Amino acid sequence: MTQASQTMTTPTPLRTIRPRRPRQQRPTTLHDLTLAELEQRLVAQGHQPYRARQLFHWAYQQLALDYHAMTVLPKALRQHLAETLPLTTLQLTRTVTSDDGETEKLLFRTVDGEHVETVLMCYPDRTTVCVSCQVGCAVGCAFCATGMTGLIRNLSAGEIVSQVVYAARLARERGRTLTNIVVMGMGEPFQNYDATMKAIAILHDPAGFGLGARRITLSTSGLVPFIDRLAEEPYQVKLAISLHAPNDTLRSQLVPINRRYPIAELLAACRRYVAKTGRRISFEYVLIRDVNDQDHHAEALARLLHGLLCHVNLIPLNPTPAAPHLARPTPDRIARFAAILHRHGIPATVRYSRGVDIAAACGQLRAQADAEAAIAATSSTDQHA
Ligand code: SAH
Ligand code: SF4
Image (cartoon, rainbow, N blue to C red; front, side, top):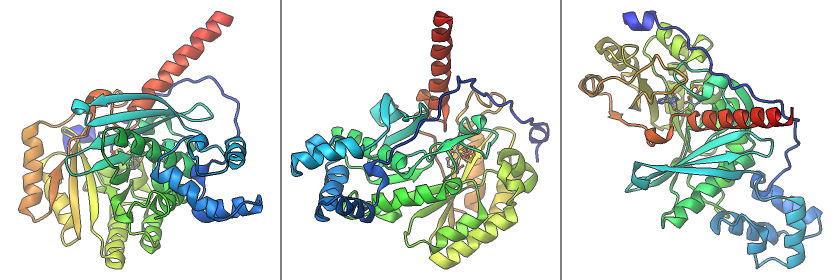
């Protein structure tokens, strides 16, 4: 560990003081239902089961967000659905573009007034959406804007699916087809496992969106029992592990869940996962200046990953006001870190985050929106006082 990392202090959480909102009940939406559940629901209401497939086609292939566009369905059914089963509860409130239009950040408002972020990223060979699975996150990593507020609540399967549908519509407007999903937005997917897996099942269904499971990546801070559980799932989704440090002292500072599931246990689970699935694991390593970016960290990382079927994504820190004392290493240091891994035969790629100029670091746009909402609420309270 470097001097800097020894003296690193835990950042003061930037908690946004928000007015209390009454708990609002969230209705079930079409995006919450698997094809089987939708069929069951329709049959129970006296409709033909094949209507479920028609709805899936319209919702996920035509990307309709309004039943009235589904002209193949009888008007009475459309009316009934509009009254009893909203398509989505997410409201798109803002889009911000960067990287010459190649990255677009979407900000949603949930029915209970929370903010959710999604990012659409257009590459020459693919179009990827990065979705959130929670509002906030309980893990509290030292460099992450999402973790600073703690967990507000889990997103439902429908709220996860809706983000993909909105992003797919936006991609379509640009003449592109959505090809990949990464669950790397706000939240820890393994702390909202059931809803995340249900969303994947819905998006995977060939009657609807039909996205191949290999085009879906889940990123986790390392909840060991769920790595084993994922290995048993029928879906061949890709797994990414946020490692960020090669020793327990440093990792526990950066990724507090390491105190519960230390590196040896985490890597043992990764080895079991590779043995069981034959699938390669990606390790994410956010490079932070003078904290985890030294030669000896790279050497230790190479030793740790030796012999494991894996790939390392080196992500230069996206600076965030949530952790103002943490900085991105120089390009030379980043290149040197990557070179050491390569010398040891560890495949590694440097990946700069998309949309740095639009607050693309995990949770930043939401933090802004929450702060704005808090200011608006305070000023309206002032006015009414
Ligand atoms: N909770 C999951 C997935 C969401 S975070 C996880 O931690 O893996 C997705 C990725 O963004 C993680 O690798 C995380 O470490 C990274 N990340 C968070 N804040 C970042 C920042 N400020 N700069 C660069 N990457 C960041
Ligand atoms: Fe949560 Fe991931 Fe952010 Fe850590 S990096 S606080 S696990 S969202």
